[in-house]
Image (cartoon, rainbow, N blue to C red):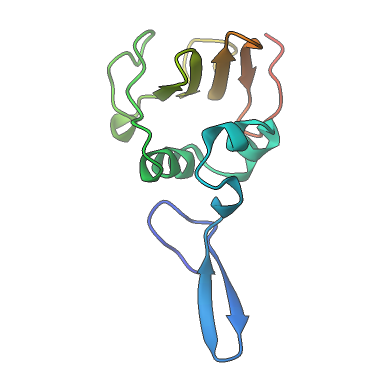
Length: 126
């Protein structure tokens, strides 16, 4: 298996003598809406892979603004959040003293409210 920074699940397809790398995020066409439309996608990628993908696609992940990791960058153990469309939010929360203590993702917008998901992409019921 090939390895590229931020893409530990990068696969290679062989076509004759040529080998080409397959971006595991290609199916989302750079769209965060496409990515989060199926929460199972969260379980297919690590928080680091998602962070790098967001940056690569023009989003600007910022440190969380509340809680015990407030203002701490993702690279230093904090979480991250991105906003788009005026009222939509996607965030990663590292393990801590919140919502069961385990790391989780949060997706929030005015249409569907706030939902929290495990790192496997399963809806949290807390």
